[in-house]
Image (cartoon, rainbow, N blue to C red; front, side, top):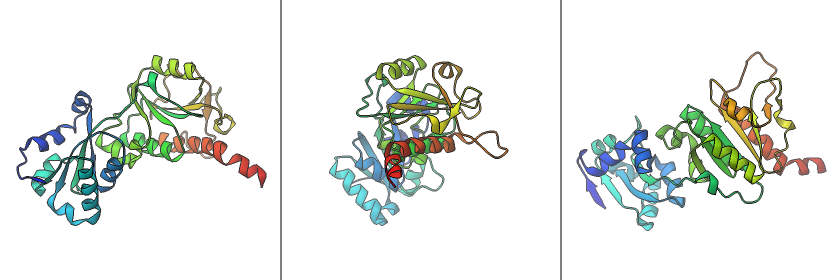
Length: 273
């Protein structure tokens, strides 16, 4: 295992540069940091470039184990000093291990949806925490893919990756799809698509049928789903009894996607009781 002492080392600079979205997009790379995320990444079938591990981090048996699994995949691991590692890290209290990886995204026209697909679509969502939470919820609720429409926050930013808690590696991801691509794909695949919206034409979210091929669009935190999408599909809403006007978009996604989960996996068993 090669040791890195200098913060000016090329690998340290490489990882640090990926804090910038333009560098992530130019190189098609990103960073997964922290023991749990590196564990998830090591177990996924994504291209791995190299790992940086601070010397003190390897006192943790989990970190030692994940380094062993990375080496078994022929992923280079570099041991660093604490000072050098901090130059590469994007977190205030780093766990001392990070992985530089290639993105593994799908092009929307070639996205394969076997069986009965359920898609979560993010339309210009701006908060990385919301985006990561929706990824995590989509994974838990059994979605078959997540699509981010152009203008959505970078799904490979450090905050989004951390908020997704490894779910990024479990689902096919489409990043920065255009509205025209989305419309063509939905129509060609025969998918029923619903836009979450608060308006007079919307039906309660639980009235929609998610047992067939389905997709749900979740919109921008301030402005909701774009008009172009609203004009092309039926609207659903979440009834509320209190005085608040709306729910956080990640909370809305959890409610609606778990209704889809209920319809797909639990409704028959409930009816039989």
